Image (tube, rainbow, N blue to C red; front, side, top):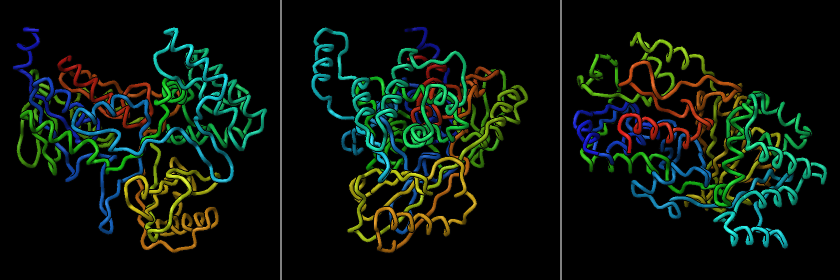
Length: 457
């Protein structure tokens, strides 16, 4: 321990980017007594998961949800002062495609609930698990034939038997077809899950990464599949709290301060900004992939890392916010449409106390990209009228397009590691090496890994 403390006195870490990855690394290092300085080019913390304001209404740059299995993210929110049960609307897993399909995580019917209780009594497991719950849910799913329900259940059992590991990665669609999932079943069940989790069409998506998500969300404890819908905007949920946490521990968080250049030396790294230069023992680059590649390109030793980043392709996420009169509500806080422009709808009334505000999410590539924002908003309004009978006109609307929202999560993707050829320059972000697709949990885990590489807990 004394040896680590001796090392700590020479550490001083600069972090480029105040999103979830960068602020995670800052919190972990500040907790360990390591001086940190965060540089964020925008006025607002959060990166691609940040709060924005429109028409005097607090929104997010995209409607995000967390899953109960995002333990690192949820633990970190708690660490910096959050309260998970107050900060989120927690819903048991329920995937509803309006008038087409519904899957719920039910209470186990007799006698299955007795098997679970017996397993707990015998010490085989400590908490209710999702395995039997999900099988019961699949067997009672509405909108599927009995053959399709059995086929979906067999697929989950077969993947569980393999520990959700493939000998080699393939396209998710090819795996599903090889496992006997017909096209209607893929369309109603697996494709919405794949697009929601990986933000990549099922024909292009990595089967192994999809299985990683199914393993963690649908095969462990029952709470892991819960959907957590944030009541706060995503800047307030974690990054702003994290900034206060870091500042209380003598760290600095500088907004509106972009890094203009990285100069690597033998024993330190210089970061140049419009405010001047600062020198650090280590630097964590937790900016967006494009910004990271731009900065790292000027460091010759990092050319292989830059090449990896520049080889990535990206998928968009569009969020259409519609402010209806306050009496307009959806049948559920979260609702899906099938074969529409609109994919997932969120009623911000019960979620965040914003009655009449509907957030409509359109993930991954598609024909919606060819439309002007005004045209897309009108298409969505028309779909809500036809599907749900909402005849009132929205008072205002706002379309937020993140055209490079996430990396395209394709098979055998060569994602950059958190380490680089220079031991005092590290890389964090949801696009770096890991089991998860581009999610908040992936970003947080990358920040934790970088902190551990600099100064282990």
